Length: 395
Image (cartoon, rainbow, N blue to C red; front, top):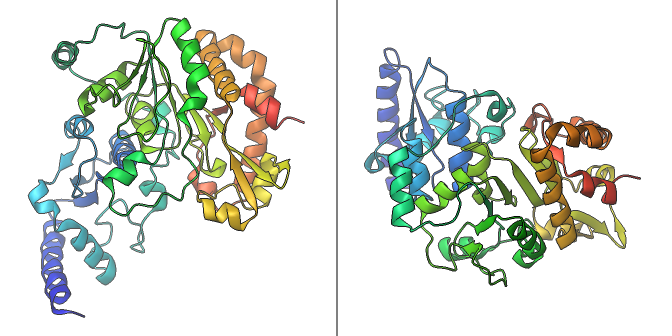
């Protein structure tokens, strides 16, 4: 052990002993906020707020970076954050505690064996809290007026749809030496047909996120790419998400706040891996990427049986001699129409598609129950877009 690490751990053990003594009188827990990655930041904190255990006083320490200050400013109204000055030592404190097992249940992120709870880390809503709880995040009225005036917003806030399509531009720009081996990015051009239709229906479509690598080739005043137009700021983006009619996203951190914070109807497109799909809210529609082996597209059963339903990285698919195929423009378009139909006439939509939706859930549940990821899913409240299931999986 080097001298620096020795003194660091010794100091941390000293602090842990003090915390242990304090806990005899004040039941505190110290937790990571995962604030450097927007998906974890939003998901973990939101679920914590929905499920707060009143027997503990929970303190959260910040990462070196805060991925979105607008989100932080809303969360800090409901969560106690440790000042950033003290947050520097917290990761070392947690590591030391897990290594020497000084305090049990110091953090709700770790189980009794001092191992990270992956369900918590990945913000899996296994208790279906998004649907069950009435807690909601929002901007104060005076803040809304200020944002509208400051950003000169003139379009109808009741007729907007937000869209977020993951590419690796943000991560490559903001994380040193980042190499993106995941397959959950998508091509923004494949969303053009859908955006055009939404505009014809009177919506203003807003692409959220920043540092994109590619931009949609479209010139229309009702399509606004916040980053391309150089009007992006984290407060404006979050405000528009809070006002959108529904959200079209991909499996990425940028698609977390509409669902977890504002409980917006959301269509996850190009979702992969299917085994980890967000399954716990009635507000979720999704269409997965397809998987092809040789010249054959796999069924849902095949994806699970061939152990491909939980893979996220390109090299692992290559190793298994398989390819991931993005959703086509028509598939994205049809799925969006499905979501809109469900919002416009919920009863009629579900009566019409009940058999298809139940068939999908039956197949999905059977495979999940036989996998190692059963605990990642609570009650299956989500829906696959019926148009996609009929064309690709219904035999």
